[in-house]
Every structure is written in C-alpha cells, then in structure tokens.
Amino acid sequence: MSAVVTVRGLNVAYGTLEVVKGVDLDVAQGEKVVIMGPSGSGKSTFLRSLIWLVKPKSGKIVIDGIEVAQQTLMDVRKRVGFVFQHYNLFPHLKVIDNIVLPLVKVHGLPRGEAVQRAREALQLVGLADKERAYPLQLSGGQQQRAAIARAIAIRPKVLMLDEPTSALDPELVEEVLRVLEDIARRGTTMLIVTHEIDFALDVADRVVFFEGGKIVEEGPPDILYNPKTDRFRQFLRRLHRRTS
Amino acid sequence: MALENYFDALLSVVGGIPTTMALALLSFAIGMGLGSILLLVRFFLPKPLSWFASAYVEAFRGTPLLVQIFIIYFGVGGFLKDYGINIDPFTAGVIALGLNSAAYQAEIFRSAVQAIPVEQYLTAEAYAFGKTQTFRYIILPQALRIALPALMNEMVLLIKDSSLVSVIGVTPPDIFRRADYYASRHFTYFEAYLAAATIYFIICYAMVKISHVIERKYAIPGYLRRGII
Image 1 (cartoon, each protein chain N blue to C red):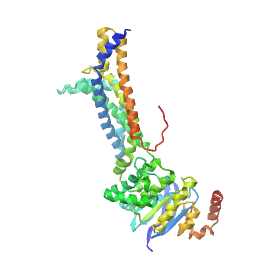
Image 2: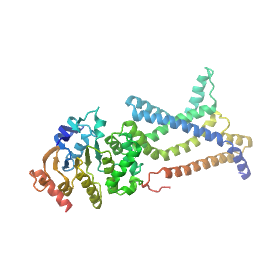
Image 3: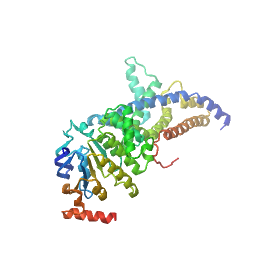
C-alpha cells in the first residue's frame, strides 16, 4: 500500500507557542486513521496544517505524491476534502450550489456534470430532498452531512474531518457517523479527529493519540481497550465517564 | 401660521424634488463606485496602498461636509477657472457629496466584509478558491447583504445632506433652495421651511420602507434575525 499522506518532523506554532512538535505520520491508501487527544493537544491544528490552513514552521508534508509548498498548495488542496467542526457551509448558497461552486470554479467541471456529481453526493449522505434548501434552514446534522457531501463530491484522495460531530446535539451525532461509516466502507482514505470511541472501533484501521503536540501512542483500534501509556488510559477513562 | 400658506409653499417646494434626487442619486453612485474601489484597495493591495485608502476615509470623515463643498466649488472650482474650466454649482455639489459618501460607503463595505466569520475564508482556502474567487463568490454576496441597511441609511443621509449644496446656489433649485426663495418672497418662513421638512421626511420615510422590502427580499433564508422595527 502506498502512502497518500506522509508527514515528517512537522512543527506548527502560533507565534512563540509551539502547538505541534515534530510529528511523523503516514496514511496509506484507503486507510482510516482516527486522531484523538485532549483539547489543546494540537490535533486540530495538526490536521489544518496539513493543507496549510495554518502554515507549519517546519517539516515535510506529501499528499498524493505532491510535496506541500507555496507553488503546489492549490494543487494539493484540490485533492483534499476538508470537513470542519462547524460545517462552514456558505449560507447564501443553496445546498446544491455549496457543492457545485467548488466543482465549477475550482475544478473546472461543466455545470451539468457538477450538478450531477452534487446530486450523487447528496444521495449518499441522505439529503437528496434538500438540494434546494439553504444551509441555515437545516438542522446541524443535516448541515454537516451537506458539508460532507461537498467534500466527497470533489472526489478527494483523502478526506480530512476535524471533529465532525462535536458541535452537534447528541441525537444528531448518529446520523452523521452513519454517513461517515458508509463513506469509509467505500474505501476512501480518511483522517478523522474525533472523540467517538465506538466509531473509531468500527471504522478506524489505526488510532493515534495526541498530547502536548506529539503523538504519544498509536496502534490498531484495540489500543482503545488496552492503552499502553498512562496518558491515553487516563484520557479514555475521562471520556468514558463523560459519555456513560 | 396660515394653513393655505403652508400648502402653497408645499406646491412650490415640490418642484425641487428632481434636483434633490439627482444630487442624492448621482453622488450615491459616485460614492458607491469610489467606495468599492477603496474597499478593493484595502482587501487586495499591500499595506502602504491600503493606508492611502484609510487616509482618504479619515480626511472626509474628519471634516465638515459644508467645508468640503466650499473647497470643491470655490477652491478647486476657482483654481480650474484660471484654466478656463467652469464647474457649475450642481456639478461641484455632486462631486463633493460623492467624494464624501465614498468615505462613508468604504467604511460600510469594510465593516460588512469584516463581519463575515474567518471560518468562511478558511473554508474557501481549504477548497482551493483563489483570493479573487473567494471575494467574488463567497465574501461579496454575504457582505452586500450585511451592508444593505447601512447603504440605504447612507442614501437617506445624502438626500438630507444635499440641502447643504443649496448654499452654493445650485440650479435648478433643490427642495431647500426653493423653500428659501418662497420664504423670502412671501415672508412666511415657518410655512416654507416646514414644507421643505415635510417633503424631505416623505422621501426619506419612503426610502426606509423601500429598504426594508429590499432587505427582506435578499435576506439569506433561514437566517434568524431579531425583529426590530
């Protein structure tokens, strides 16, 4: 299996505050990697820095064979589908136009083809009947599914999701996770920051635990039952206490 | 005060509406054109150039409109007269009002653009939109909606402020100048100026109502707003 994402010695800082400290990570073709960690551990910053939404201080990132640099940035971003915690749909555009806009303006698809692809994506996330709705007319779960549709419609080489369910009411989390499980089964390479343990157990090929800007522990989902480090064990215990 | 004098003054002052509206609409258009350019300079161009735009805004916000009108008509107009170019009071008035409005409209646009959450820019970046595309397809459509009430307010201010141009003797006379004529001809100051106030009020009130209709028409569906009348 070839690596879709390769990260070597990544450092990210906000001013003098170091947030990501020398992280190495490989994500293979079709692999689903779940990133966990306490808030402030740098996991979201790490994900965002992979496509330079936060520009790293140093280190090397290769996505789909292209090293991320100023000249290649747009090319790299076209190959990544990014889903934000707060959905970030464009509120002035109908759901379908949220998906069509990047396809037409960035990927250069003819409008008809873009609409076709957008409809397929909406079908997949179960929002076929909402294409004419505006984002703010939808529930949080529907908005996040629409945002996922926008991400998969560009047929990304890797799908990056930054806490896709943590802004949602508990009863809406399930519908989003189910959609993500469907997408995972289709073989999409995924890099997901989440605290959903059951989802990680079902879907992840590998779990990565972040703390203090570093990867403290990583391994197959089994490590969620048998964490090796005290840090991870503590973190999981706290997570269990909160959810049960 | 005699009621018939008031109505008589009203009939006379009404004739100033075309000039007043022409002053307001033309200067609004100039203000929008120049205000947009100032916004684009601040949005797209490097710091030193955007400082020029800010300096322009501060210069026009920090000085009285009446002084600006005098500088344009007597100052610049007088200077150009030496070169055989004549600027009539109407043109000078439109230019002064337009330059002044540009400063305010630039501020309206700036605050509207700044009101858009950073996350929208971030999302545009993540999806590989260029800076121009981001502005054109994501920022501008949202910013215009945010700016709409303030822009309509600026229009109302221009209608009222256009009365200042009457002091340089704009022809054909605007609402205020006609009221002035009427008052000095009939010695009915109260009726004449009250008639002018009435006309200004009706126009401005109508503009406010129209603006509410436009705001509602272009409101983003699902965007919850508190109903403030």
